[in-house]
Image (tube, rainbow, N blue to C red; front, top):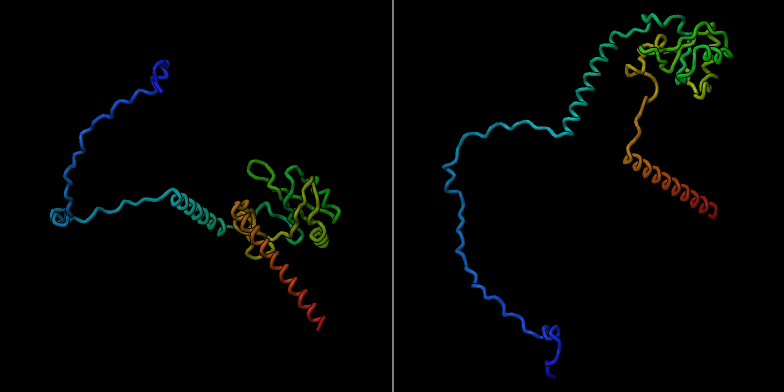
Length: 234
């Protein structure tokens, strides 16, 4: 079949391509001979190396600063503990065996309101709310009763009493009645104190441990049930 008579754009499809470009052959370069440096060791310096400069990572620096801060705080606290004597406190007056400690008080609670709430247990001689240096309440107070039996009633029945939307915690005054007692600000007090929120990793680990314990308890209950059934059949 002849291609004559076809349009130009169709004939362009049948035209041969140009020949490939001729390139010169690759020249093989001579390889460089590489030898060791053992024969040149004697030309190096024999002086001892310079001392290594100390360096600490950011985590080590953070840990060091935290450790120094804790040590400084403990040293300052030790001096305060050595000079701590609750019997010489001018604010701590009255009979310590008739004084009730009330903690976890709402910051909106006043001394009048606290006295009115605890007068149901007996006659009150004095109520002292503790404030900080700026005049803000610290959240605890001391109540001195007229009689020791009223203190015992308040100690037994007043714990968990709801005042201004918060449940208070009561205890006897331990600063002047218990030998060697230290307040929370000096590392003493009762309970574990303030604890930060555990990390997600700790929460996940705690949840896994709880699940394992629950599964173990279920298995033990199932084993006991099987043993009872076997004993009943025998």
